Image 1 (cartoon, rainbow, N blue to C red):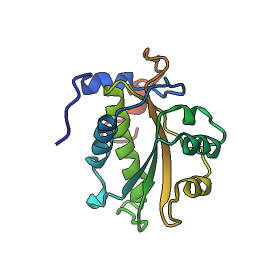
Image 2 (cartoon, rainbow, N blue to C red):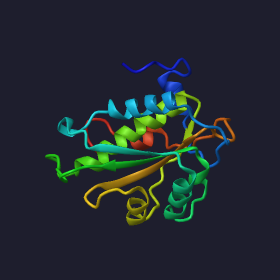
Image 3 (tube, rainbow, N blue to C red):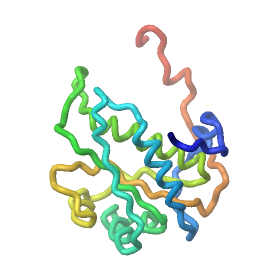
Length: 178
Protein backbone atom coordinates (compact mmCIF):
# COMPACT_ATOMS: atom_id res chain seq x y z
CA UNK A 1 0.00 0.00 0.00
CA UNK A 2 1.21 3.45 -0.91
CA UNK A 3 2.09 5.84 1.93
CA UNK A 4 -0.27 8.81 1.84
CA UNK A 5 1.36 12.19 1.50
CA UNK A 6 0.29 14.63 4.17
CA UNK A 7 0.85 17.64 1.94
CA UNK A 8 -2.08 18.67 -0.29
CA UNK A 9 -5.59 17.44 -0.90
CA UNK A 10 -6.44 16.36 -4.46
CA UNK A 11 -8.28 19.53 -5.51
CA UNK A 12 -5.52 21.79 -4.23
CA UNK A 13 -2.97 19.54 -5.93
CA UNK A 14 -4.78 19.80 -9.28
CA UNK A 15 -5.03 23.59 -9.10
CA UNK A 16 -1.41 24.11 -7.99
CA UNK A 17 0.29 21.68 -10.40
CA UNK A 18 2.40 23.54 -12.92
CA UNK A 19 5.01 22.78 -15.56
CA UNK A 20 8.44 23.31 -14.06
CA UNK A 21 11.41 24.12 -16.26
CA UNK A 22 13.95 25.12 -13.60
CA UNK A 23 14.96 22.84 -10.75
CA UNK A 24 16.94 23.09 -7.53
CA UNK A 25 20.17 21.11 -7.29
CA UNK A 26 18.59 18.83 -4.70
CA UNK A 27 18.18 15.07 -4.96
CA UNK A 28 14.77 13.41 -4.79
CA UNK A 29 14.79 10.63 -2.17
CA UNK A 30 14.39 7.11 -3.53
CA UNK A 31 11.30 6.46 -1.39
CA UNK A 32 9.59 9.50 -2.92
CA UNK A 33 10.38 8.31 -6.46
CA UNK A 34 9.03 4.88 -5.47
CA UNK A 35 5.75 6.51 -4.31
CA UNK A 36 5.46 8.37 -7.63
CA UNK A 37 6.00 5.17 -9.61
CA UNK A 38 3.48 3.36 -7.43
CA UNK A 39 0.95 6.10 -8.22
CA UNK A 40 1.57 5.53 -11.92
CA UNK A 41 1.23 1.77 -11.47
CA UNK A 42 -2.17 2.23 -9.81
CA UNK A 43 -3.61 4.16 -12.78
CA UNK A 44 -6.50 2.64 -14.71
CA UNK A 45 -5.91 1.22 -18.16
CA UNK A 46 -8.04 -0.12 -21.01
CA UNK A 47 -8.92 -3.76 -20.31
CA UNK A 48 -6.43 -3.55 -17.42
CA UNK A 49 -3.63 -3.96 -20.00
CA UNK A 50 -1.12 -1.94 -17.92
CA UNK A 51 1.13 -1.32 -20.93
CA UNK A 52 3.12 1.46 -19.25
CA UNK A 53 6.81 0.99 -18.52
CA UNK A 54 9.12 3.50 -16.84
CA UNK A 55 12.85 4.08 -17.06
CA UNK A 56 14.11 6.15 -14.12
CA UNK A 57 17.22 8.12 -15.02
CA UNK A 58 19.42 9.74 -12.35
CA UNK A 59 22.81 9.63 -14.10
CA UNK A 60 23.90 13.16 -15.06
CA UNK A 61 25.44 12.19 -18.41
CA UNK A 62 22.31 10.31 -19.45
CA UNK A 63 20.12 13.23 -18.34
CA UNK A 64 22.27 15.62 -20.40
CA UNK A 65 21.93 13.32 -23.41
CA UNK A 66 18.15 13.21 -22.88
CA UNK A 67 18.08 17.02 -22.79
CA UNK A 68 19.82 17.08 -26.17
CA UNK A 69 17.43 14.42 -27.54
CA UNK A 70 14.57 16.60 -26.26
CA UNK A 71 15.27 19.20 -28.95
CA UNK A 72 18.01 20.79 -26.86
CA UNK A 73 15.79 21.48 -23.84
CA UNK A 74 18.66 21.63 -21.37
CA UNK A 75 16.38 22.09 -18.36
CA UNK A 76 15.55 18.39 -18.71
CA UNK A 77 19.05 17.57 -17.49
CA UNK A 78 18.68 19.98 -14.52
CA UNK A 79 16.08 17.73 -12.94
CA UNK A 80 17.68 15.15 -10.64
CA UNK A 81 15.33 12.51 -12.03
CA UNK A 82 13.98 12.01 -15.53
CA UNK A 83 11.38 9.33 -16.11
CA UNK A 84 11.09 7.97 -19.63
CA UNK A 85 7.43 6.98 -19.85
CA UNK A 86 7.10 4.12 -22.30
CA UNK A 87 4.66 1.51 -23.55
CA UNK A 88 5.13 -2.18 -24.18
CA UNK A 89 2.16 -2.76 -26.43
CA UNK A 90 0.58 -4.79 -29.20
CA UNK A 91 -1.08 -1.56 -30.44
CA UNK A 92 -4.49 -2.71 -29.23
CA UNK A 93 -7.37 -0.38 -30.04
CA UNK A 94 -10.47 0.16 -27.96
CA UNK A 95 -13.93 -0.27 -29.49
CA UNK A 96 -13.91 3.49 -30.17
CA UNK A 97 -10.86 2.86 -32.43
CA UNK A 98 -8.43 4.82 -30.22
CA UNK A 99 -5.07 3.25 -29.45
CA UNK A 100 -4.94 2.23 -25.78
CA UNK A 101 -1.30 2.87 -24.96
CA UNK A 102 -1.00 6.66 -25.46
CA UNK A 103 -4.10 7.25 -23.36
CA UNK A 104 -3.17 4.76 -20.65
CA UNK A 105 0.42 6.00 -20.34
CA UNK A 106 -0.90 9.58 -20.16
CA UNK A 107 -3.21 8.62 -17.29
CA UNK A 108 -0.28 7.03 -15.44
CA UNK A 109 1.85 10.14 -16.06
CA UNK A 110 -0.93 12.35 -14.73
CA UNK A 111 -1.09 10.26 -11.55
CA UNK A 112 2.69 10.71 -11.20
CA UNK A 113 2.58 14.47 -11.81
CA UNK A 114 -0.20 15.05 -9.30
CA UNK A 115 1.55 12.98 -6.64
CA UNK A 116 4.80 14.81 -7.40
CA UNK A 117 2.99 18.12 -6.80
CA UNK A 118 1.64 16.81 -3.50
CA UNK A 119 5.23 15.88 -2.54
CA UNK A 120 6.44 19.42 -3.26
CA UNK A 121 8.07 18.40 -6.54
CA UNK A 122 7.76 19.84 -10.02
CA UNK A 123 7.43 18.06 -13.35
CA UNK A 124 7.06 18.95 -17.00
CA UNK A 125 5.55 16.79 -19.72
CA UNK A 126 8.08 16.57 -22.56
CA UNK A 127 6.73 15.43 -25.91
CA UNK A 128 9.33 17.21 -28.04
CA UNK A 129 12.08 14.62 -28.38
CA UNK A 130 13.70 12.30 -30.89
CA UNK A 131 12.38 8.88 -29.93
CA UNK A 132 15.19 6.98 -31.67
CA UNK A 133 17.81 9.00 -29.77
CA UNK A 134 16.04 8.40 -26.45
CA UNK A 135 15.89 4.68 -27.17
CA UNK A 136 19.58 4.62 -28.00
CA UNK A 137 20.56 6.58 -24.87
CA UNK A 138 18.52 4.37 -22.56
CA UNK A 139 18.89 1.01 -24.34
CA UNK A 140 15.16 0.78 -25.00
CA UNK A 141 14.26 -2.00 -27.48
CA UNK A 142 12.82 -0.98 -30.88
CA UNK A 143 9.36 -2.43 -30.18
CA UNK A 144 8.85 -0.21 -27.10
CA UNK A 145 7.23 3.20 -27.63
CA UNK A 146 8.60 6.22 -25.75
CA UNK A 147 5.50 8.31 -25.07
CA UNK A 148 6.83 11.18 -22.92
CA UNK A 149 9.83 12.26 -20.90
CA UNK A 150 9.12 13.53 -17.41
CA UNK A 151 11.74 15.56 -15.54
CA UNK A 152 11.11 15.46 -11.79
CA UNK A 153 12.67 17.62 -9.10
CA UNK A 154 12.24 20.41 -6.60
CA UNK A 155 11.18 23.61 -8.39
CA UNK A 156 13.58 26.54 -8.30
CA UNK A 157 10.47 28.71 -7.87
CA UNK A 158 7.89 26.89 -5.73
CA UNK A 159 5.30 29.68 -5.99
CA UNK A 160 2.06 28.78 -7.75
CA UNK A 161 1.65 29.75 -11.37
CA UNK A 162 -1.37 31.63 -12.63
CA UNK A 163 -3.41 29.31 -14.82
CA UNK A 164 -5.43 30.54 -17.77
CA UNK A 165 -8.20 28.06 -18.48
CA UNK A 166 -11.35 28.35 -20.54
CA UNK A 167 -14.54 28.71 -18.50
CA UNK A 168 -16.69 25.61 -18.03
CA UNK A 169 -19.49 27.22 -20.03
CA UNK A 170 -17.21 27.16 -23.07
CA UNK A 171 -16.01 23.57 -22.78
CA UNK A 172 -18.99 21.65 -21.38
CA UNK A 173 -22.12 20.57 -23.22
CA UNK A 174 -25.06 18.92 -21.49
CA UNK A 175 -27.00 16.06 -23.02
CA UNK A 176 -26.10 16.94 -26.63
CA UNK A 177 -23.59 19.01 -28.55
CA UNK A 178 -25.63 22.17 -29.23
